Length: 252
Image (cartoon, helix red, strand yellow):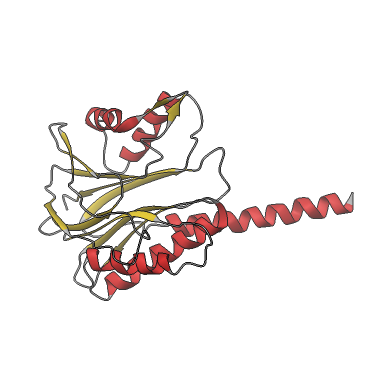
């Protein structure tokens, strides 16, 4: 009995450590000057306690804001460890003044040097937003296309040209630019959203665009509404980790 009790205690302690690890991948500040934002994360019913989805937001020295969402291949501790390393690398180099494409190149080199024995890669969107002008400079490396929703409920996606990170040492990453207006909501997500399944049918990008167009709520609550729409489609827990991050300019 004592042995069983000790095993249960150790397992709970391990689960607590893993939950802290996951929280480190998803921690956001309570507020950032000039913007409103919201987020949601759901882990897979089939996955380990931690996975490779991550996101981050932080203020740069000039008042601009770094916006990050990404997904590392694999599950469990190895994926979460690399995801945390990728997240930290993006933040560190951007705080040194590197532009998004340069940051992605350096992150790709980090992934390339990963000690993992199997193929490892990551997708990520990293943007630098000036909340005063709305200027968004971003690099989306193999990540699902970001969505812009305007006040008239029209939706469109942001162009991307960069491949996912970690494929080879010779990858070239490109910066793109967009001006975020007061009426816009930027919607970022991981592929667990579009790849959510109901039997053999995927939720898909078309359903996601229609869902984003139909939602009437503030930026902070927007991600939860997306999750609710996906959950209604799958009629059950997700089969993959999924995350959503939404950003808009603040009226203040």
